[in-house]
Structure formats: structure tokens, C-alpha cells
Image 1 (spheres, rainbow, N blue to C red):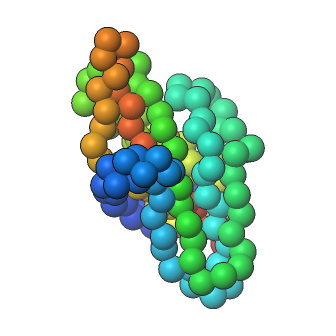
Image 2 (image 1 turned 180 degrees about the vertical axis):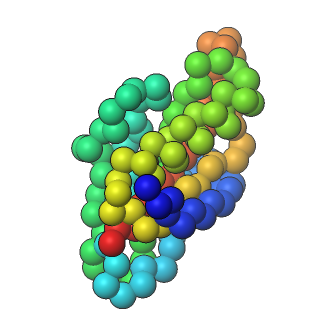
Amino acid sequence: MRFPKYTAEICDIRPYLSQEVIPEKVLPRPQNTVWRVRKEPMELGETELATDGWAYIRDGDLVRIPLVPYRTAKASPSHVVLSAMELGMRYAASYPECVRIHVIVGDPVEDLSPEGVFRFWLGVAVQQR
């Protein structure tokens, strides 16, 4: 398996959350490219990648990438890193037609005490062949 091009960035989600809107980032869409954008969270730890919850972007000059919320198993920074890495790798491995994957991690990560977990926001876009 040839690994696709991988890009990533951090997005300050505070302005979005203070206005009670879903955080998002925008990428330019090169002509004649098709992108899949994750619109809903998927379950962490599942062995199969959910095929629903995606939007296809085939038209326009931009790719809008919403960030969706996830919860870690524990309130630990290492769980945030592992969860984000797991999701990005699963997306890349599950779509052989993927030529590029772009991952956006929201900052800050939220401590949901007393639940003992963290919430983090993640956006994923996959460019297809």
C-alpha cells in the first residue's frame, strides 16, 4: 500500500464555540478533484470504518471541513494523540483511492471533569483519485 500525502493543522475552536457554531476550516479545491469530508463522528476503537457520515465535494473552488467532537476513554493527553492518530490512519488505510488526507485538530482540548474524559474536535478530508 502506498501511503497518501498527509497534511495537518491546528484550528483555534474558541471563536466558533463562543458563537455556538460548528468549527470548520476551508481548503482550496483544485479543479477536477473529488473530496470526501467527514460530517459526523465515528466510533473510536471500531475495526470497520463507517461508510456513512461522509459528504462528497465535487464542485466549487473550496472544500469546507467541519470539525466534529470526540471523547477520549480517559482524561489524558496521550489518549487524545492516540485517538486522533488512530482516526487519521484508519481513514487513509480504508480508502485505497485516497491520494491526500488532511486532518485538523481543534484547540483547546476540553477537560470534561468530573466525567474523567477529554473532548477534542477533529476534521478530516480525503482527496480521491
